[in-house]
Image 1: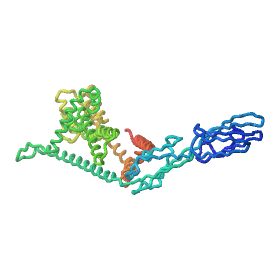
Image 2: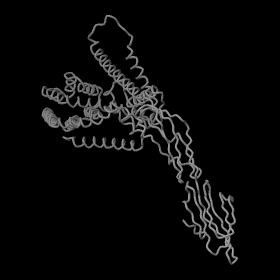
Image 3: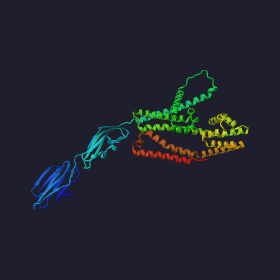
Image 4: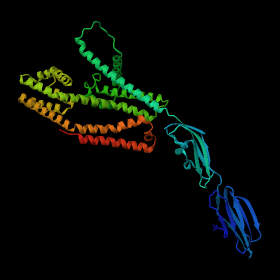
Length: 503
């Protein structure tokens, strides 16, 4: 390569290299003598006078910035001064500094390979982004001591390697996961036991008036004591929540659950207070789960159990409310038949309502007892049935309420009207049963398709707890996880829309 700044100057080498550079100057025939100076980092390191026009060879073999200055004299007595380009020779390799010579990681856990090193170069500065390693060839899914080799090269081609001992140890988080699963199963068992015990207490209260007690026992059981304490906490928190205008507005949506979900929740504020308490319990469970792993909760891990604990009761309330609605819907036809028979025998609407509350049992009897009580307190018939419809929100109840309201305002043959209502509800119920039998297999298939992904995740997670770990530890994994959840939710909504049949 010829340097265009100096005629006759040839360079054997590249700029910014780690190889020796050979500089050859060949003066032309008109040059009688010349002098050259070699500069390294702007300092003269070599100066020589040549009294003839013979060529000169200069070897650059040390790290530095070089340039050449040549002063020529020709046979005519003229003097010329030439300066070459700057040539960079870099023979200094990068330096890899390690924070720890020995690294210990748990099997299946993720860590930053390059957080343990700092790589600097005399020319390029910090070049951590150019470091490579043999981590993938070390079989990180097996325990043992591995030799982790870091390799880096600078722009000049100088290479440096550094070896670190990588000790991969057993991860006992799988054991902890099993312990947590056992704890969850135990908690579920406790909840089931408490529910059964509560059912036993209700049964005891029902038969106690017909039993003879030999000894009066005023003491209360542990469960009753905890239940009473729980409701006291709810009532105290409800009194605090009543001071908030937002909570007051928010609590109205829970008024329909009053006296349906639980007799202990007397207002919508009580349901919200129960949601806050449930959130706190879930947070305690999360803290305990982390504590047995000798870890602490991160910020997002605090909000997650709080949100789950706050909104999970809504699902339980909705399920209980739907079950209550289904009981009313299934027994309403029997109530209409009893009322119609009462009208045929010449009884009034109030007497017919009392007869239903006596003849039937379950949820429908409780609702008719409430209506009978409200009528005895002086409420109008139309208001009572409107309250019944708002409380239950079942289409058949709304139909019955509208019929009675029209009948109360316009008059008419109540026996014929109730016979029409009875026939309409009977045909409607028969059609629902036929529809359920026709779509039963399709619904079962849909439910299976709903559960298969969840069961698959649980099954694989039990066999290999680290299989789904990349979904939570990598950016692309989180993106895929969110995409799959959104896709699954859309799938459920679409299938429900397709399977839903309006009558």
